[in-house]
Image (tube, rainbow, N blue to C red; front, side, top):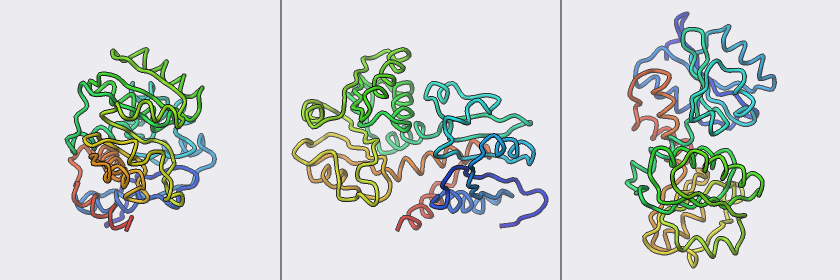
Length: 283
């Protein structure tokens, strides 16, 4: 990769960022396309100072991760309507001296589902969790597809109630919310067409855990686990054994990175290259 006085910089900001796979994925994509761009990682504690530096140094784009996805909103010049409704930003583009904020999580999930040809229109969607990722996915699926209904099973009751109210204000189909419990899972999972898992359960190092077992699932259901490490979570293994269609979280991670690349560069992302680097990194 050529680095010179014309090189534009993109970066992931957060705390911590040492574990991020984004530099490897995006730098490989920049090389593949022959772009004079470089992607790095900055551990950021003082967010306002970092955003001032982004402006002053002319950085092209940012990936924003924990704990800055919400705090960054008032520091930007413009925020995409969907990101504002979600209440968090994970992607920033600097153009003509202004900073524009977007949320690529929901779009990454939607693109992954569509590429896998998992139907959404007229289906009952159950989302497990009500945090930031669940908000992004719920809003995007609700606005870009046409489910028949959506059910939120949230770990935090107030968080779940807030998300339900926000979704009901903008979506034209029924949205319900309940606490996530063994009883609510038993009641609602058998009637779901698509189950989207948005909690940390099953994530490394808790790889032996799952909210659902094969006895609660049925053939023909689709199960999408946004956890991407490990590649095949216990939930996905249980779902496969039950005869479900499964979609691993690595697909959402990949597609949100593709969205970011396209936003920053205005070019079609090199999907095969980015997928290979991501899979090599995870293996």
